[in-house]
Image 1 (cartoon, rainbow, N blue to C red):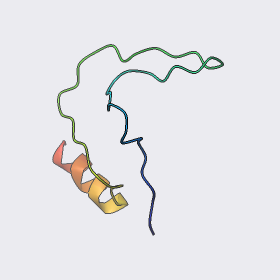
Image 2: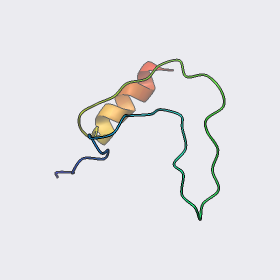
Image 3: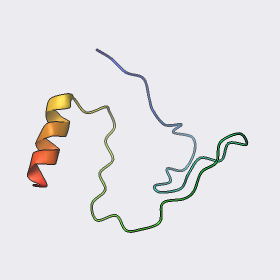
Image 4: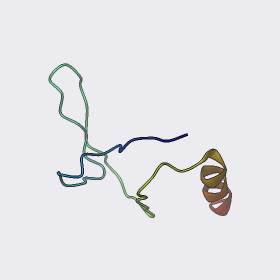
Length: 56
């Protein structure tokens, strides 16, 4: 199964900032992020499960 890009690579990647749509209320993330990983593709369910298990 192939997926297309999930971000517009012609814009900055911003983590924790909410999208600004006129018809949807939103707020920026308030808190701390300990670990952040950015992948160039969608992770498989097995990869996500492995990452979650590493955090336990």
